[in-house]
Image (tube, rainbow, N blue to C red; front, side, top):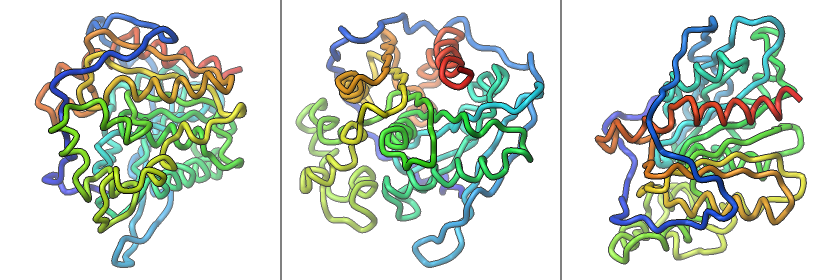
Length: 322
């Protein structure tokens, strides 16, 4: 499922970034060095694996694909589902290859999963359903690929972090997700709007934005402000219980695409329910997953350091190798 390269996410950039409370978070440097290196451990790549076939708006078959990286080490490997960002418009499974490879070399089978977006008339519910189908597919084919599919984590960036958070908080009982990594993902879309200047809010609250379509469905004439209850139902924090799996959050203090308060809202809800939740705030770091779209490749560098990826692999090791 490849998006039209001319169809880019609708982005509104905040002119200033309101700082979020860091009293329950860990503040670290947003330095871009040292960068991760790969190639230490052999990795087998399985590309364009069809994990389920959906139908598009015209009823035609829509094969959904994933790319799977499996380390060439003995024994079945725990599974990490990676969900790329893309402003609810794109879900490019080829994204973040070096970071995915680094995690695979650390001892995990990393499946980068394309999920449906507004380009195919999807809502957040459809995206969550796609992740569930991918997990079930990998579990059914665990012997074929050498997977320990009883141990599954979900890791997403930006819109992918939002979908990962929804999977972690609202997952059906058969998914068995044991851990969630949320990198600069949205949580509450109305509070998201509140962190922008008045004219920027007007742009975000236009009827039929990508975010509105991802909540309400294709062809909507609603804005996010027109149905607050439906927007609240799309907030992963609503579904947190004391049974929710552990979360690891990351946000840049200078993120002007997804304000830092978004990860804080979910982090706080998790802590209030007694769920293990750790939040890192990278000083000065910006929004990484859309660095090419934003014309700022340097924005991605703080997110591919040994320090940040070390936090991720350490968290995965704690919860998938226990």
